Length: 77
View 1 (cartoon, rainbow, N blue to C red):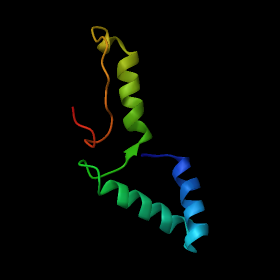
View 2 (cartoon, one colour):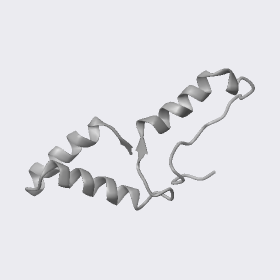
View 3 (cartoon, rainbow, N blue to C red):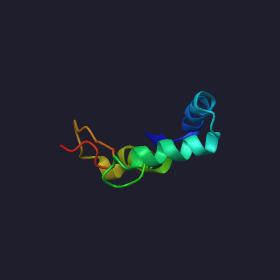
View 4 (cartoon, rainbow, N blue to C red):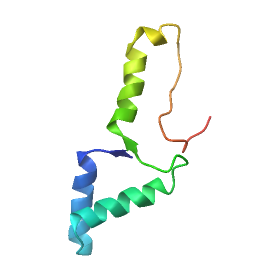
């Protein structure tokens, strides 16, 4: 899960279904997911962007055929 505008859309749908506020549902969704992530937080757009920028830079010139997992530790190996 990455904290984007889509989270707000999901929270709005959840709020309508549960009769809660959108913000309440957003916070609940993020905190429940963060509890499952070893780093203790949901990814931010900048977390993904930094990896993409690294891969697009000359810093990664000698890398070949790798899968890079940006999951906060939820998928190891």
